[in-house]
Structures are given as structure tokens and as C-alpha cells.
Image (cartoon, rainbow, N blue to C red; front, side, top):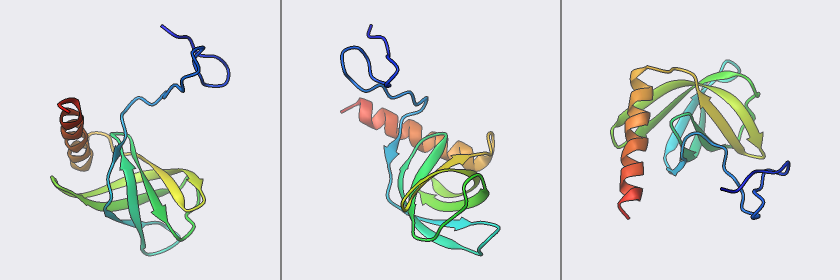
Length: 120
């Protein structure tokens, strides 16, 4: 087993992904409702059980809780999320409603994608 050094790489030189949940590419419209603006439209990049990355052309302050609305094959999702990071127009959102119906839809969607990827 390779150990990790201070640079976030293993001694074998491979990058280590410290994420707890796998990310899956998903490209759908997302509506973002924040306190500072009525509605901002964006496009998702990827999703995990913990959060979502999306491209947004209007600035959203970090550490703000917003409501995200988007559609997955299992249904429409409306969930609150914390704006965790920003890199140019790409934002990272962390879901903050554990146990909600929306979170259950997201978890089921990610589980289906895990199974689909494992069978390849």
C-alpha cells in the first residue's frame, strides 16, 4: 500500500483522491436561488452524494446557502446547498439537507451510476 506525502501524492507518484464519494459527470440545467438574486441559471458539471459542481456566469458569494433545482432521471430535485468553492465560472456546492427526499433521489441516482460503471 502506498503512503501519502505532503504534496498529496503517493510515493509511487500517483495522485490520491481523498474524496469520500465518487463524482459522476452530469450535464443538466440548474436553477440557483440565492439571497442576493432571484434566480441564476447554470449548467451542472458533475455530482456526488455530497455535492454538485456547476458552471455559473454570475458571481455567487462563497459560504452562502442557496437552493438548487435540477432534474435527474429519477425526478426533479430541489435542495439547499452551501457555496463551498469557486474557480472562475465553476462553483462547488455542498448539499446541506441530509435525509431529505431530494438527498435520497441524489443518493439513488449516484448508486445507479456506480452500478452501471462497475458493470463495464
